[in-house]
Image 1 (cartoon, each protein chain N blue to C red):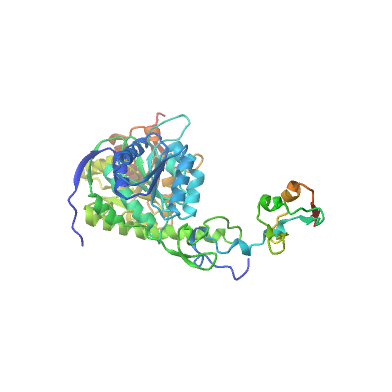
Image 2 (image 1 turned 45 degrees about the vertical axis):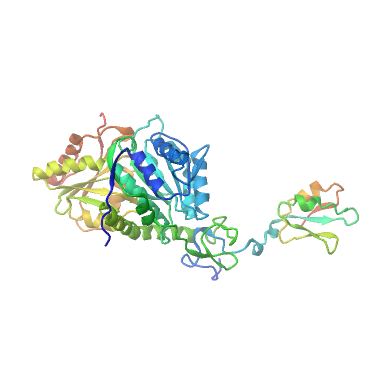
Length: 410
Length: 92
């Protein structure tokens, strides 16, 4: 058991916290293209490069598609690579997201979550990352700038674990976190380096039947991902699913190891329960909104209302067992979605959590609250109304509206 | 698919090639085969340079070229580039 390291407190916004975490993580290649509200991350990082504070190869690309391609290709040579984006930038990466996960390249990417056009909007919602749900990337949503800093450091260790070898997105709410100054506790450089360590590469079998480290290397030639048709493609996809399952074990381990040096942990790394032990009504949410919801839960608790919150920190892989464990005794659950799945039956978090709870005995009422699209402010009073609505459902044994829009003019 | 094909737990990740391209004969894709007129051919070796598949080899011991039909896809670039029209593409 290590003791908690003494840490400096800096005033950083979420983007700056990410840039600092990347600086300390001994990253070999950073390739990026600017987009609001991510820009500060790469600006700060380019300053580190210009000042000679890092040895990172910094690649300015002409598009996000190229930025991720540069990171992917660096990563498959065994390098540690990072990029950052948001909204339309992430959308432009769509094709390469699948190539990256398919090549099992542990690239880490920070996303300052932002709405997608049209109409153009630079503010926060989760439409950008939710649209990439099935791209094979691990997705972690953070609550504050401190967690953004901590999660980027953790992300490298999770991604590069040989049992995982998957790229990771760390999502922080655009402007709400990316541009808001907070006190952030930062670890010393050498502690972060030691925590992540150097990249461990597994051995694989090459086409010549040779055992070689899993990287592109002229000394031990191999090709990655060139073609697999009807005969092998399916098997490679099944491997990616297994890697996601392994991540469900690795993320809590990394969360715990990090807690030992930093004194900070985020639930079990997958889910963060808040007053759920005896809760009768609860909400589930992702990202910075959890901070506001916690305040409301505290107020309700002081009034004797058995309210709770489950913060979904890791959306991919979906922590199915934990969701069931925490929510099985709750009577009514409100799933808060900050994105829409047009023509679907509610938002993406609603789909998944309702589906997860389908098989349990005496499952709770599960309703959907879509909120905060395009950065619309979500106030404590709106969250109070969500809990009032959940109380009414329990009291009347009746769901009036399964899918609700919070803060929408109707 | 044959029973010798490996299952998902046995293969290397990320589509690392499990077989060399030397073992994957692409020559059976072709519908046209290059046939060379040995009288006309001047051994200028332009066809060797132009072949996109590297399927025409210069054999110094013979002082001549050789088509590797295991890898020739029958594209006809050699015939097109030949300055003395010594290569004819013949339907298989």
